[in-house]
Image (cartoon, rainbow, N blue to C red; front, side, top):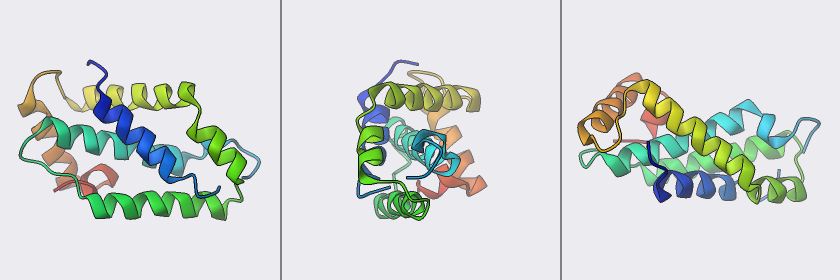
Length: 135
């Protein structure tokens, strides 16, 4: 699956959405709820970009990112730690690779819109984090 600006942009935007502040003992990248939320956001945007019959739920997505940020605040992360995470290109690339891998595991095929639509509809039907970000 070819890297596209869409998923990179989604993960970048999601990580940047956290930058209001966020610090505890584990690194932010090790906080499963935050990490998985960013990956889900990127996957949802990629599915909506690759399937013309599926749209992102933008307001819900923004609210979801704010909830991830709140979770990070609640864990005590500092602004400096969040900024470091936001600017970490290695971490961004790692999240992108995870998202693409999961999309492939779910059945997407590069260049095959129908596969993205099928996966997207499946995620919507499941009502999981990815599906709740799509319509």
